[in-house]
Every structure is written in C-alpha cells, then in structure tokens.
Length: 167
Image (tube, rainbow, N blue to C red; front, side):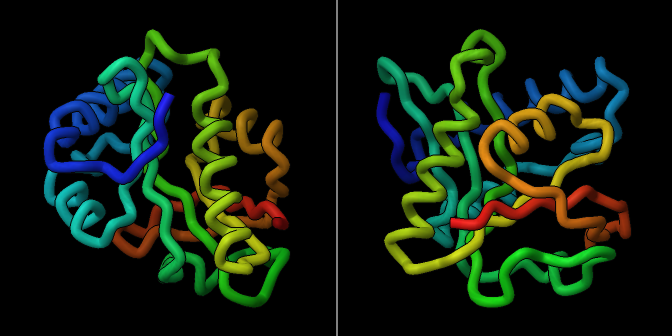
C-alpha cells in the first residue's frame, strides 16, 4: 500500500470515495457532507495546495485525506480549549472505500499525518467531525485524539466536535 499526494489521475476515485461517504452519512442520518461539500472544486484546490493525499492499493485509491499545516480559520474560536498553542497540523476530508473499511486505513492516514507533524516539529494534529459521526469519533479516540470542545464551521455555522492529538 502506498501513501502519496493526490494526482490528477486520482480525482475521479477521490470524488467517488467522497460520494460513497455522503451516501453512508445519509443512510446513518448524519447531517454531514449533505450539502454537496466536498466537491470537485474543493479537490482541485486541495491538489493545487499539495494537501490532498491518497492510499493506493494495487493501483486503486482506497482512502483519502486532506493534510495541511497552514492553520484552519474554523479553529480560531473553540468552545473549550486546544491542547497546544503553537503551530499544528490539520486532517480533514477522510474517506475510506466501503470494501476497505475495517482494515485500519483511517488510522493509517492519521499515522502518516503524525509523521508529517514530527518532520515539521509540530506538536499537535487537529480534526473535527459531526457529533453523530460515531465511527469517526471512535477512530479518533482509538488513535490518541482528545476531545477539546466545539467549533463552528465558517461556511454555514454548523457545530462540530473538535479533537487534537499531542505529537
């Protein structure tokens, strides 16, 4: 399995993973990613920034995530408190192919992000998710993240539960 930056040739597969995740959320009655986000324009921007990553297995993209060290405007205000005060990494838009779930791939994406944090001397990795996204919240807990509070998305004001992992 290969972890690498998303390339132009991967875009259809990444969008497909996002659509699959959107359908899963809809089935589970989780009001996350139900407004068309993330979309192709979002992916184009992520790829242009060099912040979109994939896990490839036998030539097929089976997981994806956005990993950045540019800060996150949504994290400026939190009802609670972050663990660290300095620079931090962010992981967003995590999606795993349905047939690949249960293989620890989301955890693998987290570990890759942690390795990137260590390379940069960054002390914290932050993430947020919908309150009802129990599978993501379990994965975060299992992978060393601590609940820090509630943030609100800039794009629509929606609340999200926020976590950070000390590196």
